[in-house]
Image (cartoon, rainbow over all chains, first blue to last red; front, top):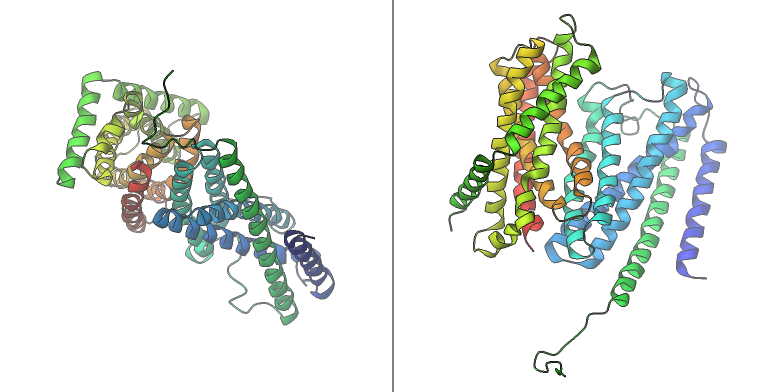
Length: 231
Length: 220
């Protein structure tokens, strides 16, 4: 069994245990009822998305600085995983908003900036696809990834900078009962492990794709001192 | 080579070629009038609601005219492969980029010189000095970002598609702050001072970031 299969099996098991913690261990919210259980994965995947985009940022900076291909592959992997986690955050948030706020969507600063985050990194993935593969795609995408990261603090602090429908930070404000906090922290750790495994697997795929691309069209080496014979 | 002189020379070249061909500015002016026309029919504007809708139409028209303008920023360079020639000179890529951005800003300002009077003429909007200041401040940041991503998409496939997808999300800060400033200048609720402060902050942030990134986008 390859280490990748082992790691993904472990990540899936961890997520299942987190699910058990969310549904069996954590108490039901007195006001909102069972729907509040969305909270655990919603917030965890938002934090995982921040982490993934931080990987894109750091990978992009290192790539521009050193032209390091490994950094670029990590950036690619991080962007894809980050878009997945942002999607999860948005969808779960909408499912939670419908029963509690009475609407799936409202143009509140945090929702809007999260949607913009999703669009920016979806654009990042498009640049990778549409630019000439190799150095150019990596450079352009690195620039998009670095600029795009400006939105991450905006998303994070939007609840304190503006008056939003979305609730403000409740973890740091110590507003959770201990069982809920424990379930949340456990889910957070599991989600971060899951994200790391996703990035690791994606990194492997990107490496294999890079190798295949260079293998299909091998560079033709013609020594300078030995010109090809003209018939 | 003095970077400032390089930038001014590149900007002058761009504006002179636009002056000689007179392609882009008339087309953009027409585009803006068409956008106002669509705004009129889309919103059923009359004397009662014009006041609340005009700020929105201002930004919609400006943003989309800007996209059209930036889509053309590197078009002539691409068609004649003159960017490569410029990059082969000892001039720094950042200076060349600054020149392109300067010319693009000038074009966008010309668009605004059409848009703002037209808003006054067609919708009776009150275009005060405060409105002009907010729009001009937003123009700086929008122009450097638009120019940066125009340089990126100039060398990708499907560039017409990619330019708005990359540029619009990053223009949003300017639309948020500029929108607030224009709304409050036009008599709707909002804190004008705060919005202008935000616009200046974003201008500084994106001018600095773009000047750092320009080298990687232009340099081969």
